[in-house]
Image (cartoon, rainbow, N blue to C red; front, top):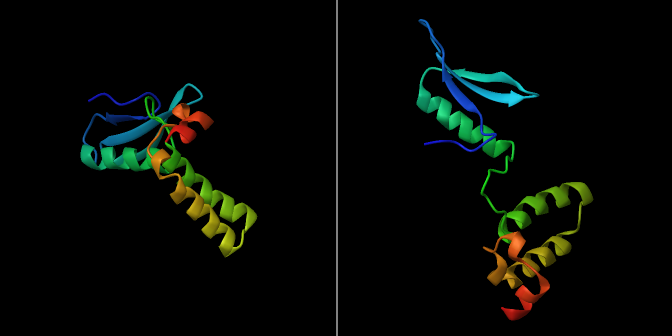
Length: 116
């Protein structure tokens, strides 16, 4: 199966090597080796974890209201140090918007919430 653009590549290096598979990404027009592995399966798992940790937005993926809230909240708490009651208020407000949780952000507007 083909991977999306910007995901990185897995290559098998020639010769008799202990770790013949390499995960590479493209930076500034050049390919950079990130890690070497013994099996292709290990390389595939690493590639998925790498893209997950680096928050790569994959082509065709639409961020939902739910995903945005859980990305935003830890960042906001670290930066502003709000009180416990403020954090509870955010969670309660989030629960109030249950009908919006799975909606892509592109489809949200003030009229969307009023009609639900």
